Length: 313
Image (cartoon, rainbow, N blue to C red; front, side, top):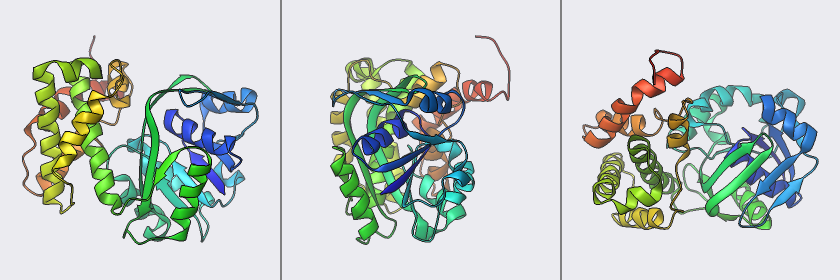
């Protein structure tokens, strides 16, 4: 397949790298120091699944130079999706489909609003990874996993082709029976883990061990579950216990990317995670007091990171 990775950070770099390593034709859309490193040195990935170094990769900051592709994997941050959708138009031909890998549940509708529902799948991924330096990605935890599917959950040949490409690259990939349920299961995990971790400024090993923060994680998950139920997403009750088991198996030092961004003073996905829980709950009259506390508590740091307000440390 001819695949574009739109946003070559810790997620796009890992999954795109695995696909390129396996022989798929992959073009990385990147910018700044990451683009320069990809052009000059290629892509290096360190992983418990096996390190690899791609000395030569296709990389550009101009989608119009790439032309139409079979699939676009969207690896930008959740708050960048709408702008990315407009920028990726030159990649999208009549048969192209776009798969979001963002945290959150709003990316498919944002992509579809620009590119059309017929070009948009639902999608998600699970991996703990980060950028060591430009052109160098480290996979630090979790079995790398991707899931995607048509928004109406019908079987499709194009989704199966992409699943087979990932399987050929040694990546666990799945087309779930209901992609919306799968996305909300991920949302229940990431919004809760990110938010509690960012407020507590502590890693997974601490959050799950202290009774107080463990109860916060469980309450945050119950609030997401309630919003999902109100939106008629068939999220099973076991999603909460399953997600706690997932957190119990994270590396003790594990943190979410939103937490790291906030702690390091960078713009984060706060609006698309805890903010989205609050907004989606308000739309249907579902109370989300813990997520509201997290969202409002972290908002000053988010606004400072975006240059909207100024204050000292």
